[in-house]
Amino acid sequence: MEKSWKHRAGQAALSLAIAGLMTLLSGLGVMASLDLAVSDALYQSRRATDGEIVLVGIDQRALEEIGPYGQWGREIFAYAIDALNASEDCRPAVIGLDVLFTGALDPQGDALLAEAVGRYSNVITASAAQFGDALGTDSAGREMVDSFAVTEWYQPYEALRAVTSQGHINAMGDADGILRHQLLYIQLPDGSRTPSLSLLAAEKYRQYHNQPSPKLPPVSSRGFWYLPFCGQPGDFDESISIADLISGTIPADYFAGKIVLIGPYTPGLQDRYLTAADHARQMYGVEYQANAIQALLWEEYKLEAPEGLQELLLFIILLLAILGFWKRSVRFTTALWALVSGGWLAFCKIAYHFGSIFHPLWVPVGVSLLYVGCLAFNYLTAAVERRRVTSTFQRYVAPEIVRELLKDDSALELGGKLVDIAVLFVDVRGFTPMSELLTPVQVVEILNRYLSLISSCIMKNGGTLDKFVGDAAMAIWGAPLPQEDYIMHAVQAAMDMVSGSAALSQELREKYGRTVSFGIGVHVGEAVVGNIGSPQRMDYTAIGDTVNTAARLEANAPGGTVYISRAVADALQGRIKTTSLGDSVKLKGKKEGFEVLTLDEIL
Image (cartoon, rainbow, N blue to C red; front, side, top):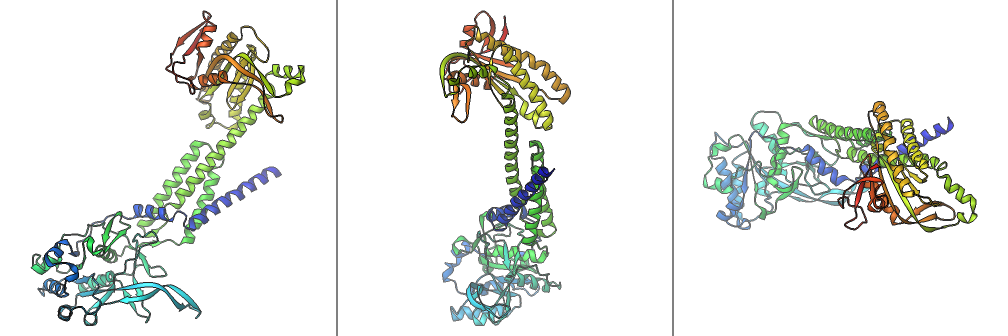
């Protein structure tokens, strides 16, 4: 009772340690990059929008028609804004300029843009911050280094700033460089806050349509919110160029009541990012803003579950998984692994639908590692147990070896002699799959029956049972004592095993619904026979090519079949009936042309 209690306590302690270690590694971000990639694939999905956001691109066609972007005057944007607001009855709800107009450029162009913007109340312009380390104070007034401080602030030139509202256009990727979040506000050193351009656009759109401002998304301590992309790169693109606005190609009423975003839309302007929506194709900054605006208008926000809660869930699931995998059958552990891993992914998908984000990879990876580890442990435990049972049988077999050792003390010394022997290998086919479905008591009972049958057939025909290896056995004839007709004795033992297993197999089928059979190989030739090993641990056995060949024959023999070599067939010519398989059976380590035969009958 005390031993059993200690064993269970040790198992519990080991389980807690393994689950705790794997939880710690997950929390430290060991598989963070892969987990983020899986999160993007699982959570991000394309959705049809209501068409209220229109992109106007500073695209390649505009560069070809107007000229290189670096030579543009700001009057180009003034013309575009005037064109969008040409009719008082069908103006856009919001015009967002996803372009930085910092500093004075050209007095005439600067004045034209400021005047055009000032004539309307639906234009918002862009600002941007640069972040870095700066010395600050914490809530208790102690000095600290703020690694997320605004070190530079870029905003429109003074005349433009005076007639517009500004929203920041910072796009900041996660640790792997992928855009998954947006910064809702930027806290400036003077204490003021600047909202994102997308939030400002969503609020102005709602005001234009006499609707309440959108509910704000939940943000992290630094002000980031998770962005559920509704479109991939190109999904918002209607191929409208800023050149179309200036030339009047697109009717002004097409933009009535909508959100119009004007921004770079060509690779040469270097405003592209990899996003959670697509890791292979880059998304233009103006598309990123459009996705954020749409998410704010829909108000379908997602909140990342607290890391502590996720780590606790992982620990509990891993602990239960260990207990479920421990010393169970392969079928059960595989089913449990699939259920837990698949169930967690389904849970994550459902939780995301209701607004919560969980790490999708933590549980499947943790459970998979435990599954493989417990499977290996269970296999090794079963192998050790089979060896223990086999070792117990070895105490009672091969009495000829015991008698030989008792005759002469020198026989206890290492060494051997070259003799002609017949070697038989036999293995129980189908035993391992059947053993996984039975209790240990049933497995041992069946193994005992088969090993007893094997040993009795060998002993009855004067053979020496060399060893049991799990559910396989090796026997030799012609050693340690010389024998007459030893080759016939070997094949007779093989046929006795085949016939004897038929009755036992039928009994198993009736009792357990499963059956097994023998695969047997017999070869004859020279081998070194004697004590092999070390002075501390030696075995009386046979080694050499003859032994290896017999083992290869058995390994290839189907259940209920005896494979023999041509050497055996020639030695017993006229006394046995065989069927030649030629060299169709390829034996490992044997050259082409080695003939294999089936032993059909003893005449």
